[in-house]
Length: 202
Image 1 (tube, rainbow, N blue to C red):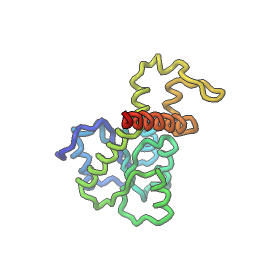
Image 2: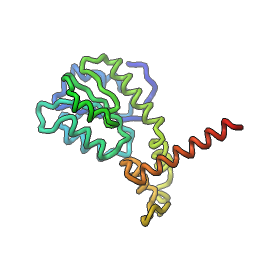
Image 3: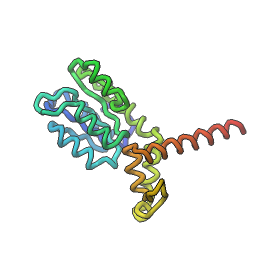
Image 4: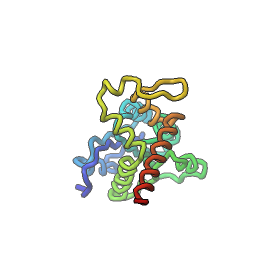
């Protein structure tokens, strides 16, 4: 068993050619994460992420699919359209061209690992991604909303422009990082920076 702290996170591994001997690291994660899911159908993996987008999820994504019309870039873009808060670790045995790499690292992929990576390297990458989830200001905002009662999340909470938002509406905006989601993030970061600066002046 790998010596890692218990992580409240699901690891979703998407590879259209699942090789049990290559995926042993998922067994090693048992007891340290909430759930480990494997999908050899990229579309089903993407659908699962969509259905569970309110959970802490880390995706390990194969880059080159041999049994699917879709490729890793398609799934990566699909995840990014749903939420910018889901860390994606690209897992590949292929050389990635410049165009593909540009797409991956424009805020869409958290990191990239070779399929020859050791179990420890893979789990280190997962732990780094988990720390990103825990420390991201947007995730902190999500947690605060999800800690509110269901009733409180469903009533009007604030107005922005000509529209009124419930907390659940804001949750979707934060995940998608649409206009109001980005504005909320900027405002919270600005407030946090101001509070921190004022504290240093005391």
